[in-house]
Length: 258
Length: 329
Ligand SMILES: Nc1ncnc2c1ncn2[C@@H]1O[C@H](COP(=O)(O)OP(=O)(O)OP(=O)(O)O)[C@@H](O)[C@H]1O
Ligand SMILES: [Mg+2]
Image (cartoon, rainbow over all chains, first blue to last red; front, top):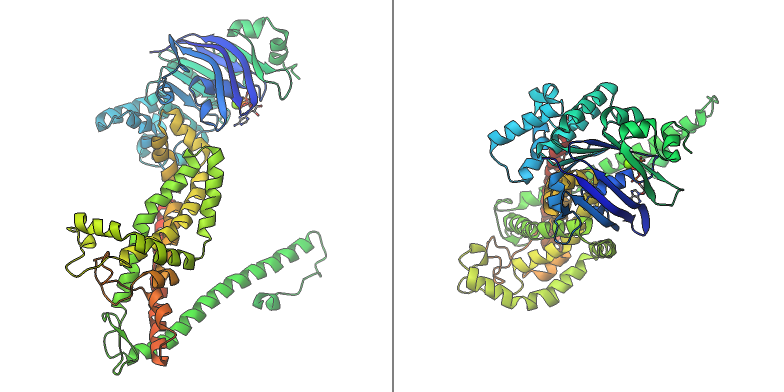
């Protein structure tokens, strides 16, 4: 079941450094939302505030509100661990558990949720690997270490691991930046597929990719280095790429940035 | 040293591009090779020394060197054997490792994953500092503080857990400078070393692995189980083996703390039974020994050499095996 995310005036800090300021936006259920913007403008930081992963960095903290449907993820008494169980994440660099087999990597999240029945696990592993477009390549060697796969396969393994627990939201931080065009296309197809069931937020530097896969696009930027990053505008992808309201967005998209 | 005399003269005849760098390379290679050869030579020299002294002594032994518990090499006939010493060495070291290992790993994990940064650094320094304290200090502390202050605790163990053979005091037993206290001093001694090395290993686990677990909704404990421990297993085994090695060879702390005897008893809280280790026995006997007695002690030293060697080889085997499994492609 997918859910709506509403961020209200989100500020994120690393120690005393404010990395993003005043981000407010709405992410609709069953859509793919792309976040674009120059390097260092806080896209990853914002993404990590959504699943409360930002705060695991020593000294890092978040101000503001992030609502998942009607629940404030930063409200008193909300358990960050429970939040991360409902919001999956795929990182820029593939990070399978290096000592675990392919099977165990995919099953890790389910096992965390207390699922031990091997039939249930078998089914979920196959379903997730099929979902991540990896099943045919690894079905013969599920017991082999996940670290032995190619980079693109490892990234799809990480996607399988994230979707195995059926999260309501899937966050993807430049998931294709280390992949070849074929793997990239496979993952883009996958996103279109997955949005039937999940809310997807993807950070990307690839404009064509944003245009291809996303329904809505948000543009982040920063005034100068040392300044916090801000959300400049967010709108339908069509509007952002054809007729953005802000000059800065247009400059960035047409490559006239900086 | 030996290496510098064998160093080939710098070859400047080439003269062409990069020739000087090749000379530097060759000099350095010769130096490192020399250092490697030196280590080998040292080990062979020590082994040969021990063997040449030990074999004649063991031949003069009127009993079986490996099964005899007594140590009276200077009697006539000469009676000595390493059974009790090896027993005490292994028992005290294994107890020390069993006690210290989990605590050390706990301290290391606290520093790497739980402590706030303000605390982690000073605690880390403290652990390093404790690792550098000489063992005689631990020995004196064990003798003058720990042993007298733990009578009640040992009595308590015997009263309530006496049904476990380890804590059985028997009819004539007394608490005091027992095997348990000596083992605990060893445990405290190896604790900081194991903790310091394990901490370094835990800190090397990539943050990406930790975040992978957290993003799946792992609690901190689950993250450690999923991402930290599997990755650092072989390194921690190495740290434990290093601690064990230090406990096996510890001399002065044991000699100070333990009430020395040649027994092979599992009644570790009975100070009447006491015990001994190879290293402590050498320290306590060597000065007063006649030439044959000294060579007998050297023979026991050879046994310790072999035990330590075996432990290290085992550790290496475990580490490479689990390392291979981790990196298997
Ligand atoms: N762990 C950290 N500690 C301190 N500062 C950080 C940390 N991570 C990021 N920052 C800073 O926060 C700002 C935003 O970083 P962030 O990684 O969110 O940018 P980004 O938009 O994802 O960039 P990129 O496109 O290069 O991935 C940058 O100025 C960065 O230097
Ligand atoms: Mg980023």
